[in-house]
Image 1 (cartoon, rainbow, N blue to C red):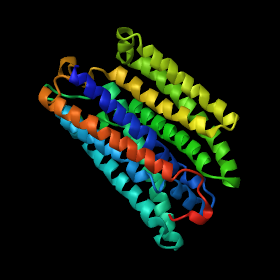
Image 2 (image 1 turned 90 degrees about the horizontal axis):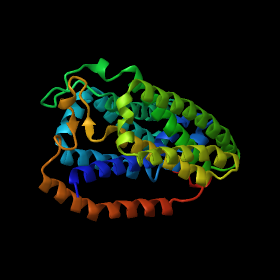
Image 3 (image 1 turned 180 degrees about the vertical axis):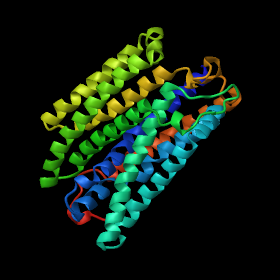
Image 4 (image 1 turned 60 degrees about the vertical axis):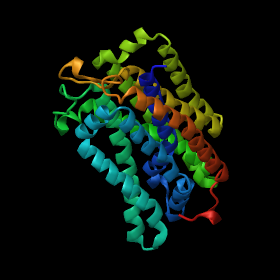
Length: 338
């Protein structure tokens, strides 16, 4: 096995896992002010309260795996995205604090502050992740030693911001479907219309982003000629997207959620295909790009990490399945803790 390719795929699996699992609770945060009163906002928070911190384990694991498997790419990414990543870290902290502290005091200003922090931090997190994806597709000014030599203007470009807005729409759609699954009564009925709204916004941004990507970044589809099987991923991704409105219309939220999850996994896979074998493309000189080969750790390190991953990932998956099984079902008003 080519361990460089194996770890590229494993990073994609970790990224997709984070997108699917943390995507819906970020979406709940984005939609936080769709709740009409304090009780409904507490229901929103309680729907993700038992699982949100476990979902972020996938992000931590992704960061650790990237650092160990491809340290040069990790260093270049953190030098290029240093300020955005620090802002991302602050948003992750404020979001966690908001979930845990909001209901500790009943004062209106106290809860209003944490409601706003919860919503804005969720939007900011999704936006920054999307910007990072957009910049990775566009490429960054990276010199021969793998050092980022650009400015913030090279990070927050129009296309990257568009991908950021698209990421927000994906999480909002994913979160609205999750909320429909977890709520009941009048709140659930209102979430049904929210699902349609978020899906409509997602679909528009999906088409605009895809069109601009194909037109303005031709090398993003070069690997689809090299690997014809990749068109199958694109086709399955379109089928998953098309199945979402069908499931919403026929009131099959479980299938809609699975289709939304499949959409996120498909988008992650398409991102990986477009990027391969690069991890960070240099806009200064193509040969200076950081790839899975020149940015990797030693072969021995990759093999040791591989066996550790083989032993550890099943425990993470088992833990995740157990948590979701224990906290399955609707959120009842009498059970609200957050």
